[in-house]
Length: 238
Length: 285
Figure (cartoon, each protein chain N blue to C red):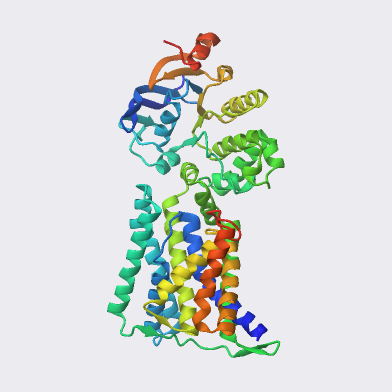
């Protein structure tokens, strides 16, 4: 049984007077894929941004690899091994694909840099074919692959990915999810992804449901039925 | 006369392109318009003048390094924190113009003369198709173009250059992947002010520097950068060379008093036709 590498407790975050997260607590084990599901406005993005440090929290603790990081700036959390792939604005639009990846390995040493970029090209061969193309001229699906590729290139211990399937054709969603599973298996990375797509059940080890800023369930995927999850992401779990 | 006008215009545009580059680098990377850049550059020019009798190389170095340090520090302790708290363009206009007045006041208080000319060594003359041009002026033009090439090379081939680009294109993601964005901003601001200083040194050597030159160079730099497409380095350079020509020819044909009338009339006309400037603003290098 692996140990938790990320533990969140009593996490509260607000937008002005509105509470987006109401005392959330959960943990993530080493080398697992955890899915956060829930309807729009449930607080999924706020939760991931709070963990990554790009959203200020009101109260609560975040423990990552034995460090209390809830007051740390983004950069320090990144250096410790956390990386968020945001839902939007997740590429450098006017840079080539190659340069997007080159800049994403900034924290790695020279030898590791090439290895990481090669890994991304192997996982997404289309990015190798389009490596000289300017990022914002790629198709929506390719841009999403590049965004995940940036996350992989960052070589973070834990990758937080915000709704990677949004706007993707069903076939591409399946392919992207298979790739995430492969990353976990091949590299021992941990992945936390927020999702509204039912296919997350195929890759996640555990799933927890978020609604109106509160956790409604936290279960191993094998114990969950598709219908329960479908009800959740349609917004009617209670 | 036409050739003479072209050469004079190119040289004037070349020198002007240094503060324009400064504006483009600072705005392109930080997204903050720093209206004090010209005055800070001229302050550096005055410092160079002050130490010139001591040693020319050291004097230039003192001016340029001082401006780099000032640009770095004001970005670090003033502009970046304000930007992080959501400061808007109006606030930055007021703060940076105030900073400009601070440096203008300091120049008045510190230096013994309000108007100076920098006596840098001349390089002789060069004959271009029958027109005699001072070698130093050609050097100034080549220096400006060389600076542009160096900045482009830095941007394309070095890690710091890629960090600049990444920070200017997507600040949030740049932070997330681990770029020290505050340091990138400070270095960009330092380089911008250092470029303005080099521009001021050339200007002070070919013409003269007084307490108002900083505002002239700074605002002209901004206007030229906007006409080229603010943040767009190529647009800024093309715009600087065109504006240099406009100033040169309007001076020759209509006399010096018409220069600014023609110049700013053209600026307004260009911005009506192309509000984002000649090559478009991309807020990126």
